[in-house]
Length: 465
Image (cartoon, rainbow, N blue to C red; front, side):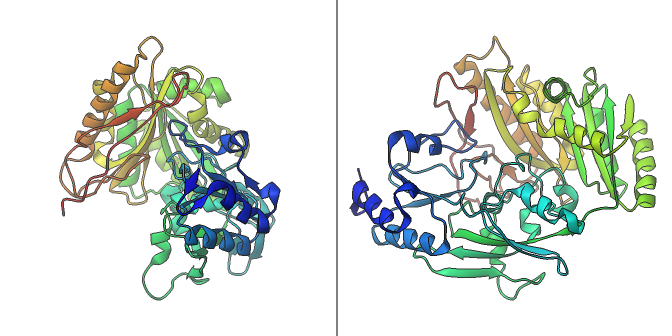
């Protein structure tokens, strides 16, 4: 097989000359584990896989590929759900898993320099003794790498108050396709010139290869408490979300799950969720003890005013962690019971949260939300990362495609009441914020007829502006 201007065997030989034989994979069985990331509906065997250990080795890999016009895709832990690490058939997959060291911790300035292969949770574990932590906490934080978090601009349950990855990094060391090393950002809170740090964050490795990250660390809050509220109506839970924000309260985390999600997560984690509730709301408040106590009382009264049938406050940190464990396990929890699954994320104005929930149910019938609803960092919008499943007995592929189109049309109408008011994001493409038209078509694919995971995407279209 030839890529660019060089045959695969010759390319592998060049890499082995400075990486070593064990760090260059070209056998079909060795390449198989790297054919996809967490978006398993899309698979492609790469031309070669390389696993460098030093920045100099990465530079040489890039220079060889640049000289021979061979495309390169970077990969971290492979937990992403957007296909950002999907290889190319004629390209090299550059795996940065061996870059797994925390280089330095500056407690005075609350920063840490880390390599891209360091696990998200490992950063907080390393600085826990100093009373610090790294705020972004995606559901896969025990496994996902910080380099992948930067590439995807990962968020997490606490992004409402503490922001996404882009809000929690200060500088990047990156390599261009020809191996040039650049520093983007600075050790200070702001840097002169264009905001290239924000440009690179979320670019999925298309602009540069990340080889070092300087992250911001935050002091651990003195107190954190979680309220669990149960509702007999999904719309009432959605209304409570808007009421909390309208009162000027910015929770550390605010997530909603409907009944099907609650039951799946409870069977999977045994978090103590009320399985008879139509929906539950998890609200975490943190800060100093006196402030949190006042906020808990205020939010509890507000939830009861929104017709919550039950309001519980986590008794201790162990129960607080258990409440969140159920939410974080929503994705694996729905895996066993269903033959097919859709994952998407989208934003719409906060007042439409309850309306959006009703719209889903009208359009999709048996397809249910099994995910979370939270207010984005801009309190004028609601972000709903949701899982939709095709119930057993109704999983014919033809029907699934029809349901996907109905879902998209319905969600677009509820999400985009006027041009420029909302941004739609699927896990495969970002819709233009200036467009109020629904996507023209949907590509709905399954790579393996026996696979339990499916995906969908839409063709990109130019911004009407």
